[in-house]
Structures are given as structure tokens and as C-alpha cells.
Image (tube, rainbow, N blue to C red; front, side, top):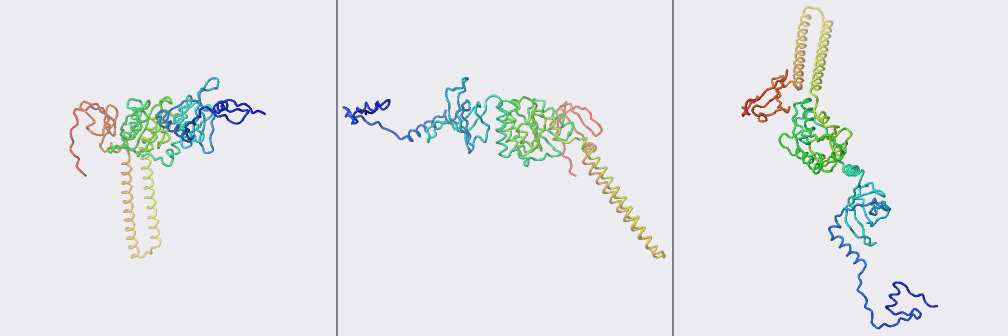
Length: 445
């Protein structure tokens, strides 16, 4: 039976060797065919891989497409094809992608997602297949900001930036507060008004920054770092504040530079971004979150009226306790004297002795009462010193400029400037008549 004639590639080979398929013996050719120079598969594959690695455009590339054939391995690696999405469901091209666990961090990816990936082209030598090694993936379209928020939240939470154990308590009576916000917005004015009303003894220092747009996150972070680097009149507390706005307007407070600057701050931080319903990454990292900038100012300082009432209550409680102790000691003295009188005999010599001891006891009681009265007076003085208005009652006054800011040095004022002077019994308006002149040094006590 004759053999089946060859087809395709075998036909060309048969023609080269002039094989008679009815006679299996090959026929000699007129000219010998030279063997082409060949290379091992691995050498060719590695050469292709090196060429890809040498191309800078393929080692730092952003690619947009639709996730196809998504598969998650047991080790947590993601494998999928990135294809051009077409209306008919077909695609012009597709690229195999590998998104390893160390980079994806459990990010939510599913079939059909429109994504933007960053990575580099590579060749998987065992199969000789081209693939994109992905190191970053971002959703496209609706929910992009939320997805980025969740990604950064997971990463920072894994690093411990949100741990409740690291959050510090706020100082009860801060001397100086730093504010990181825009100098032209209403937030700076609102914070000044609240502090002037509640606790005018605290001064403010503004660390200006951008609050939205390109470079805002870096500007906010620099504002926080600037306050931490102060060596003179450094603040006891920092307020990072911004008024309300759209999610895009507030996005700078969800970026990593701001979160890390708050985390690295040596000074406790209150975050007050947007309105009560707006919760940012900065809120989670800060030592305390305030629903609004005005609320942050109220949290930062006590209310002087409440403090005055509290001091008055403490004074009243101390007075009552001291009075109760005096009455108790007096009653004990009377009881002791009565016992002595009942137990003492009545001869004249014993009565003299009894009278002497009575006088000694009366003197001891008087000394004890005098001591308690002195302690009461000292306690009352200490409590009075805690009263925020006590400083004014001793003849001092609080001077504020025409912007309602507390003036702490004469150099802060200039000639013909309107000021407000608060005394213990009221407030008057005044105007300066000269520039500041060096004052004499006060004598030491």
C-alpha cells in the first residue's frame, strides 16, 4: 500500500530531500542543503526578556483596560488579562498581568472592572509568555476616591497609625495653640472668635497652608512639621482644620503625606476637617477628631465661666469640710472636759489641778482652731489663685488689638492703634499714643 503523500511543511521537506513516497529510499540531490545556525530556546527567551527590561517605556508604564479571566491563587497573588473593552464583548488586544500579594495587599479586584495599572513588561521563561508585573492598580470611574481611601486606610491601619493606644491626651490648659489652615478662609477667624470667648489666656499661632488642589497634601504636612520645629513659644496643641466641601475638595486630608505628618508630630493633634459627616484619614490618625473647626476650638480649651463655677464649688466644699472639722474637734474637747470633771475628785487641791488642766485644754483647742483657720485661709488663697479672673483682680489687665487678638508684648502695637483693655470689672476702648519703648527690668522679688 503506498504511503500517504505529505502535506504542508512535510511537502517542503520532501521537495528538499526529493523523497519518492512510493520508494522510501531518498534520492540524492544535485546540491547539498546547508544546515541553518540554531540557538537554544532559553537563550532566545532570555534575550527577549533582556530587550524588554532595557526599554524604559516598558519598565514604567500605565495601562488602562478591563479585567478579564481574573484568578486569585491560594498564596494571595492575582492573575488576570487586561483587555480593551469593546461594545460587542470582543477586544483588539489583551495582556497577561501578575499582581503579587506583596503589592496587592488584598485589594478588591473582580472580573469586568475598569482599572488603571502600573508595572513593567516581563517574560515568564517557563512558558515563554509575555506578562505585565503590576505594582499598582487603581479603579477607573465611579468610586475611585472611595477605593483609594479604602486602600490607604488598609495600608496605614496595618502599620498601626490608627491604634488607640498611641493617641495622646490633650493638655487641659494650653498656653499656645498652633493652627494649620488657610489664612484667608473663615476657619481661622472662627477659631480666633471661639478661643477669645472661652479662654482668652491662650494665644494662637497660624501655620498657613493650602487646603485643596494640587500640592495641598504636601503643604498641610509642611505646616504640621513647621510647628513641631519651633523652639521659641512652641505650641502645646495643634489644630488641623478646614471648612466643608465636596469629597474632591477635602481629598488632601486623605493623602498619605498628611497622615504621616500627623503620626510623626511630637505635639498632640486635633483634626477638624469638613462637617460632622466628613471622616478623613487625618481624623483617624489624629489624637482627637472634632466634627467642625469651631468644635475643635471648644475642645482645645476650657470655658472660663465653667472653670470659675468649678473653682467656686471647690472653695465652698473646702469651707464646709473645714467648718465640719472645727465643730468635730470642739465637740471632742467638750466631751473630754466633761469626762475629766466627772472623774476628778472635789478636794480643793484636785479642783485647782482640774482648773489648770482645763485651761491647758482650752489653750490646746484654741491653738488647734487657730491652725485650722490658718489652713482654711491658705486653702482659700490657693483656690482663689486658680480663678482665671484673679489675675485681673490683682491689678493686671488683658490688652487686645483691633482684631481681638491678645497682645503679649509692646512690640506688637504701633502708634495710633486702637486697643481694648479688659479689667476685672469691665472693658474699655483705648488708642496708643506712641510706638513701643524699651521698659525697665522689673525688680526680682
